[in-house]
Length: 298
Image (cartoon, rainbow, N blue to C red; front, side):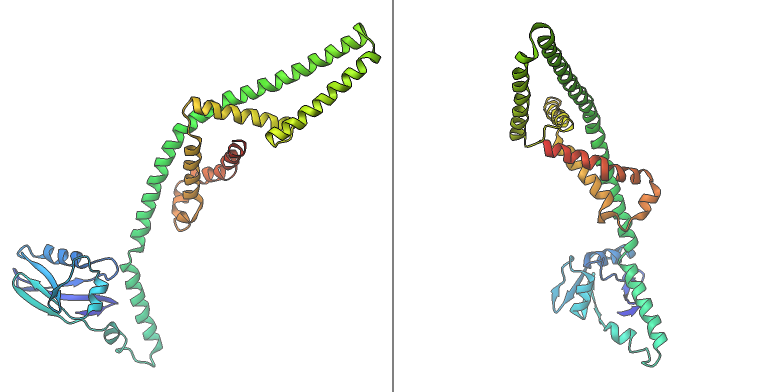
């Protein structure tokens, strides 16, 4: 065994062709099973292949890195044993570099780092991670489309319901004002109606305070409208089998995959699909605010 550009190389004689074959080992990504599989694929005449050290067989799950750290080992091909001498990488690469030749040493180190970087398969790892994340995004997006359709139907009905309540309250207030006006100017006088209107106004203040104690919210019109909207939303969600927790969990996961660290090194995705930027914007402001609103009033 020797090293070239930081990678170990083994020359192994093939039994059928009686020639030596050179095998590059990847300490980080490969194990003994991968090494044996590569050898067997080069010669169909190999019936038995195993590695031994100190008389014991080396497990196939052992990484190449650990195999090299074990030191010298033997390779059994069919009935033949071959001894593999494992040299030190420093003896092969660095001792040949003169101490005073700093530029040459830097070049050798760069070549070693480049070979190690290639052995880590960084590009393949990024592409595989990109494929997995995009597949997950598509699954969540398909699920959200179905839930979003049901949610839109519920929102339309809830909006109409809250509008009806506001118009009903306005009509009631107008009827009350008209009723008090008729009693004041037609049926009775202001002297008689003044205490009645006072207690009616005070009763409204009592009702507002009771509303605050019951709901822990102010009696402003916008807050009351939102409360009726959310109450109706949850009732219709149960009726239409719309899982609110599942919807916002999927939405948060979709938002996380787009905005958080999983995509910080995959900028090519954003360049390839500009729609993701728009989805990210909507999730950051509109959807998240909507989720907080539902959680607050639930």
